[in-house]
Image (cartoon, rainbow, N blue to C red):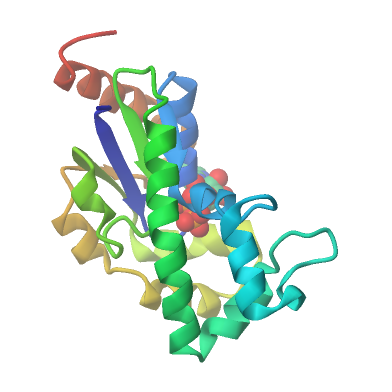
Length: 201
Ligand code: ATP
């Protein structure tokens, strides 16, 4: 049984930046978003089931899932959405577990933007929240994605509030300084997690 640190944070909070730094310290990381993409890759059974339900028009010319098309199909169809969630959620959970089990580092990280909303936080040993003031979150996302401030604020509304996330946090990394400072913070947290794991280095 691997010891799992759950990592989450709002859009543009710096999860990827933090995850990259943990990974470069040798920590095995699994990204829930990636796992969600892997389970519907060509050749996986779920893709066949999706094509059977929605028709082959839901596939792109190269055989990959038309994710945007699927999002539009389920947007105003609760029955289809529920069918899809029932199909994918157990597969994604198993995919994540399979990748976490491969960890050879003293602990592994499961990163998920929806760690709190999805209830996944109940399956991890400890929760690290990357937190930034909303103004910084919006500014960094606008700069990264070239989207409008309104678009980012709309996404923020659909996510758990900062307060809800922080309520479930064991550790909080306030990512409001520069990237070299962030690197040092991640190193400090890494040493702390190694200590929790019994001092293996
Ligand atoms: P999303 O949920 O949207 O995928 P995220 O939480 O993974 O976002 P990142 O992509 O890591 O966030 O960070 C958002 C942007 O802010 C990126 O362009 C990143 O390089 C930048 N960034 C993150 N942390 C810092 C920092 N401490 N100083 C400056 N820029 C930062």
